[in-house]
Length: 142
Image 1: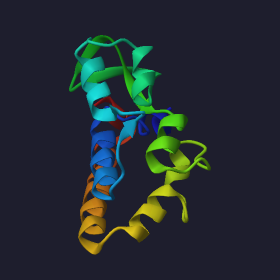
Image 2: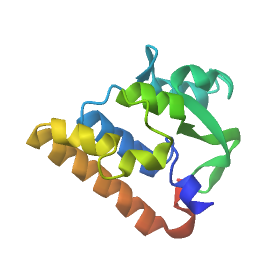
Image 3: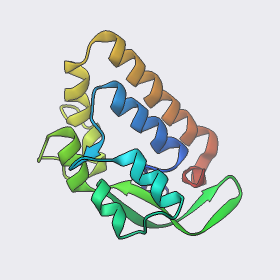
C-alpha cells in the first residue's frame, strides 16, 4: 500500500518527481495535454476521474488529502503506463517503477542531459526521497 501511494503524481513526492522529470527535459504532455494542468483541473473539479485519461493520468484507489483534510470525492492520481511511454518516448516502460531502473527511462534522460539539468533533477529527486523519509508510512497523503 505505501509503495503504491508513493507512486502518485499529485502528492508532495510526486510533485518533486515531476519537477525532476522536467529538469531532464521530459515534456510532460500526453497527446498535447499537459499532465500538471490535468492534475489542477481534476483537483478543481473541472474534469472528472474519467477525463484525466486524456492527460495520461488515472485515479488510484487512495483518497486525496491536503494536510489532515480529506478532499471529498478526490483520489490520488498516477501517470498511467501509456502516459509514461508517451512522455519518455519509450514503449518498453512497463510501469512507474521501471522508470527508475539502471538503464531505464530516467537514467537514459539523465545521460542525455547536461550537468546543470542533471544537478537540478537530482535535487528534486532527493527532495522527493526526503518527503517519504520525513512522512513515514503514510507519506503519500500530503
